[in-house]
Every structure is written in structure tokens, then in C-alpha cells.
Length: 240
Ligand SMILES: [Cu+2]
Image 1 (cartoon, rainbow, N blue to C red):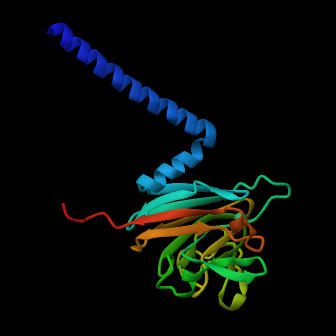
Image 2 (image 1 turned 90 degrees about the vertical axis):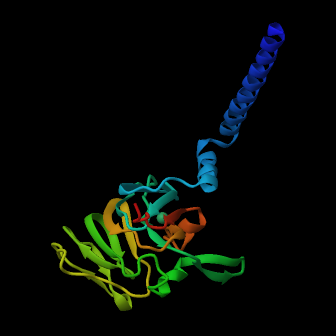
Image 3 (image 1 turned 180 degrees about the horizontal axis):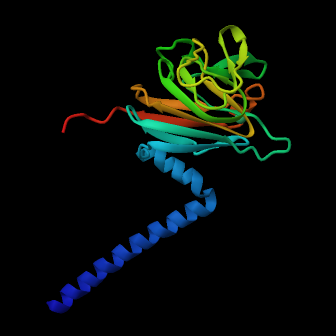
């Protein structure tokens, strides 16, 4: 009887070992075939990724973002440190826009994405609409459109895009008491290779899935894959 029991246990143990072994082999094979990143991305798409807060670096490469997935929680204060790490010669300018539904254009090749997001047209539907954004450490900035945000600058101020397509250079900085906004357009820093900006803001209570993207070079960057997914979670419950 005892012998029978221990044989059963041994059988169970070996079946469990076999299943675990097979799972490990399957994972190793998937990583070998597809690489790690697509599998991590797929897992994040399936199970979500934990929200991040505080300081978050976003690197711009040719033509993709690192990371291309970002989860934030409404009400959290975050500082996005966006850095253009273009490695091409010559390097590429890159943008960072957030929205939904890229604009489209009809071409002989069919309907293709065009510049910017449709959500920018209405500040209420835009991620940045009414959001106070404090910009610090602006360097190597080609130009900066504040879009629907209410934007302040501390320290060196880049060339700022203003309504009606004008731009304005504010040498020496403007300080936190001066705000800029450009209703109806996308918030968009355009960075030169090696450039960067730090944008501090409270994540707006606009839960759901958003996209972040670069549309430089007549939208070629977007079409080449330079876009990622921003997931905004509802604010943390205030109930204890
Ligand atoms: Cu780009």
C-alpha cells in the first residue's frame, strides 16, 4: 500500500516536472524565434503593465520609442524626460505627441496616416487639454508647440509655436509665471539629435488607451513604427 502511494506520488511528481519542463522549453523557443521584446509587449498588452509615476525617461530612436508602452494613473504627478537618441548620420529630429486617431490623407496608395491626432482639434477630447505642464531642462529643441496645454518654462526656453503658425523665441527663459497655449493643436516638442525636455504634469483624469507618436519627415516616422501606447488608469480610490 505504502509502495503504491509512493509510486503514485513519484508519477505525479514526474508529470509536474514534465509540464514545467515543457513550459520552460516553449518559452525559450518563443524567445529564440521572436526575441524578448515582442513577447514582453504581447504579455503587457494581455495583462497590462503596472502604472509608473515620478521620473520616466522616454528615448527616441530611429524610428521607435523606448519604452513603447507606458501606463500612468490619473492624479499622479509624473516627469517625462524625453530624449532624442537618434543614431543616424545625420541624425533625425523627433517629436512626442499624445492623442487618439491620427489624421489621415488619401493617396494613390490608399488612406495613410498624416500629421498629428484628430483629438487635438478639441481641447476637451485632447489628452493635454487644460493640463498644466512645467517644462525644464529644454535643450536641443527645434521648436515646441504647447498645444492645448497650459505650459510654463523654467530655465532656457526653446522656440515656441504660437497660434496662427507664428513662432516666438524667448531668450533667457520666461519663468513659471508666464504661460503658453495654442488651442486646437498637438502639444509637440520637436527635438534635435541629442536634445531633450523634461515635462512635469499631473496625469489628467482621462482614462483609457492613448497613443504617443512622432510624425516627423512628412509622417514617415509614424508610418515606420514610431508610435507607442499610453494607458491611463482611473485615479486611485480615495476610500480607505
Ligand atoms: Cu521621429
